[in-house]
Image (tube, rainbow, N blue to C red; front, top):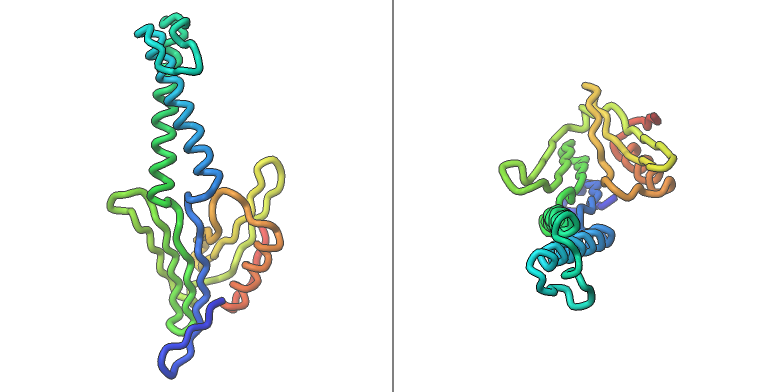
Length: 189
């Protein structure tokens, strides 16, 4: 919770910064997939042209049909996925913040999207529209730990980042702080 002062008036603002695509795991996978795609394309082209484009391997010994053409196909797919992942990192897709301003009674949820007319996604609500905070915890092979802002019209807005789930203690602390700040109850699903 951040306390800010401006002039003589004291107002309280609760702000959570949300990390987007700029995570170590995304850098790792974008690099691995891009380099793998380049390697596969070069292997396929080497098998076609019979010129060794990869100095540490012998792809010229591959038959172009079927191995070389398949390597080229998979390499092209790998290149596209690698470039896509790097663009999401560069554009920092999913980053933003949740801001709750007690003085004005406003809630602002901001996220960055893909370039275009919806690059900046901003949702604005009022404190009086909030019904509760929902904690959604699902354990297992693919765990899910989310905090949602539930409005009186039954709309549920996710407030936590996507990807790596927060620890149970972090989720509980964030939900309790936010519920106290907003003066609403916590629901569990």
